[in-house]
Image (cartoon, rainbow, N blue to C red):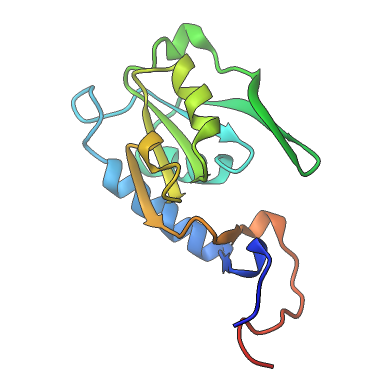
Length: 166
């Protein structure tokens, strides 16, 4: 076996797959909200959480959708996460009845910052890695910590070398 870069253990997600997995997330959340099983709002973590949040909001008929933006990278250098755009806190409050949706939890550092602003919200991600799982209430698929997920909004079609062999 050869040494590989972290991104070479890739999990490629198509638009169809993210749609199916986001719908599965909605189905798992259906009926579990505090307001007679319903949710009052969805907050998407930008940018990756926007597509899953839209699908979840549609499936669960949630009309109040907002975003929170957290910056933790400067180019490819990771720094302390900080909120650069908050949702309408007059509506969101402490997070009671609110779903926070993201595409992936990796280390959980972003969600720690988000949870601090909405401590009673329910956090849901489509994919989860082991280090970040404690920050998530509901997810669909767990992948290993060393797996790099390639989302469709980050990809273009091109040839890729096989994982093993030549």
